[in-house]
Image 1 (cartoon, one colour):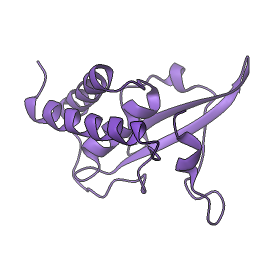
Image 2 (cartoon, rainbow, N blue to C red):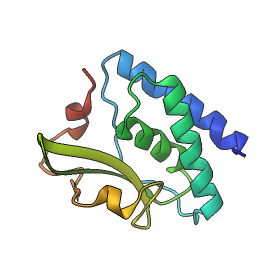
Image 3 (cartoon, one colour):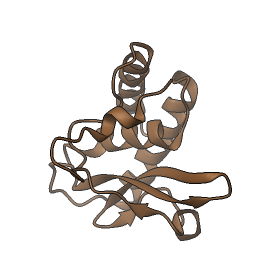
Length: 138
């Protein structure tokens, strides 16, 4: 059974993200590291992943790993030391990208096999770069 607190907050975050996407605004939050210091329990991790996936799949037109990860990150960032990670790897038709959330370096809702080969990209790769501009939806 899903935790109503996580679900309600995830729905609000998905609605905000959808509104940003429809206005053509950058989707990535300004910071990609959570401010919280609390320990994330396995139950809270499971409930937050489930809530973020459900909310994005029902609300957002852009139902991707990026939108799911942004909602999950924003759901947890104030209470837990989470990080929004963007990674890339060579693919069959060029470069493949993926987004996921970690807490203490452990991915939430992801498998090792699913992340194999992805190289995380630092948020501040070059001075003055705004990586969120790359991830605007078209």
